[in-house]
Length: 135
Image (cartoon, rainbow, N blue to C red; front, side, top):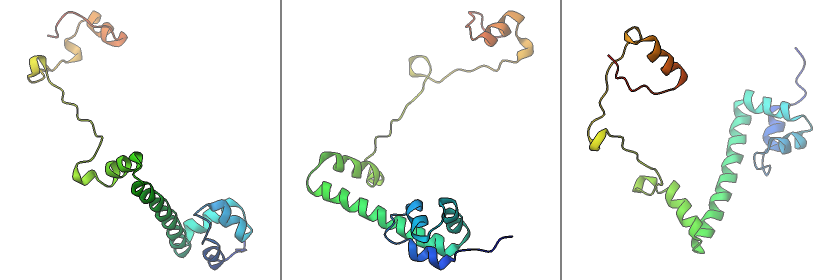
């Protein structure tokens, strides 16, 4: 196995101010993207530094969202309520209720393939509907 050309400490030192962009980290260390990604995946300390940098980016984005909210930008109000406000009922979730005829229960009947005629099996296989009820 080859000798490691880099140390975890080099990657940890390179991560701040990269926004968590692996190419930026690799450029600062002087290695390939794959090498940087490998160090992030294999070294818990490098992974922790990488995750912390990614959280900084999220904080920055959240700060911009709050600024838009304070300006009264309606998209920001809607977005914040539909994400962080879900627990308070602000969601765009759609509920679909399925019912049988007249809003009653859905009726079902067990049908065994061996009880069907060849024509009924062929209709099912081709996606056609048959008028005949299952036995």
